[in-house]
Amino acid sequence: MRFRGRAKGGTSAGDAVPPAAEPSPAGPSGPPPVLVIDALGRKCPIPIIMLAERIREVPVGQIVAVLADDAAARTDVPAWCRMKSQDFVREETLQQGGWGFHIRRTY
Image (tube, rainbow, N blue to C red; front, side, top):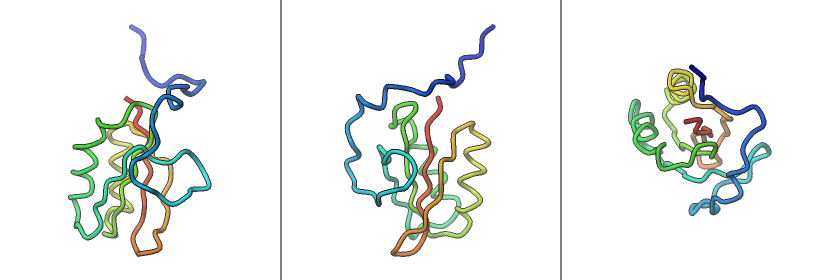
């Protein structure tokens, strides 16, 4: 039985996806997110629940960003990514407070 995981060479499907509908801060690494989930003001575990419910809206290989200001999200989001085999791309500090977590959908 073959494993149908991530390909080593990356993906070219990113060119066919329209740009994100919501603006995001310019990040030094990686493409802008296709979907931004605004969980600012929500307490744990709501940001994770919102991510789990909406990640299927993003094409495989694309980025979803979760905006959160609950300190628990700094450990919860990367842990959720490990548990669900999604790629945690980066964390960025937001100017208005909180963090933006970028996750690449892998399946």
